[in-house]
Image (cartoon, rainbow, N blue to C red):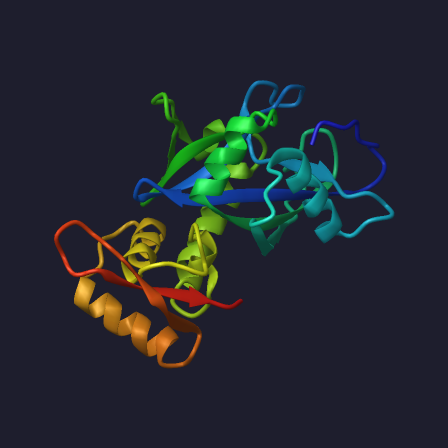
Length: 235
């Protein structure tokens, strides 16, 4: 969001939280702002919503510009309306959660010129973000109120994993995955280990027995152990 704003009118932006799960952790993609305000600060990708477009259309355009990934899923998170959230004027932010599979996200980032960097997300008593080169950020280090938006998004994501299919949106292949892969996604989102037996009972009762996921005829060899059954999900 780098455009000039009219001081006598209200503006609406679409801001996205591009999240992905890899290496056992939840990651958020951020970029540095190239212009004031908060020039040089890390921020969520965002853009003004045009008079002739919906917020969802703005998000699709933003994704094409920053993370051209067909597999990315998005849904509205919350609308942030604090009067002083942007020093340039009255700006309302419609924030969206974006879930992207790790393998495809990494491939896209390597090819993209959008300037996005994956930060490992830790949210306990406070928000901490760590880049691959060891840079540590807190919520207050980010532009605008993006720290608050990220905290809201991560908490919402954690609250949704038990009763929606959103965790499966992070899988590298929704047509061929093991329950161990699903467990890794849940653990990364919730930031805590799960008991394997209890987790599998939960997944089978909530997803397999209800037909939300189905076993395939394939299996995955894992070292010397018994091959793991593979599943697919239809969204």
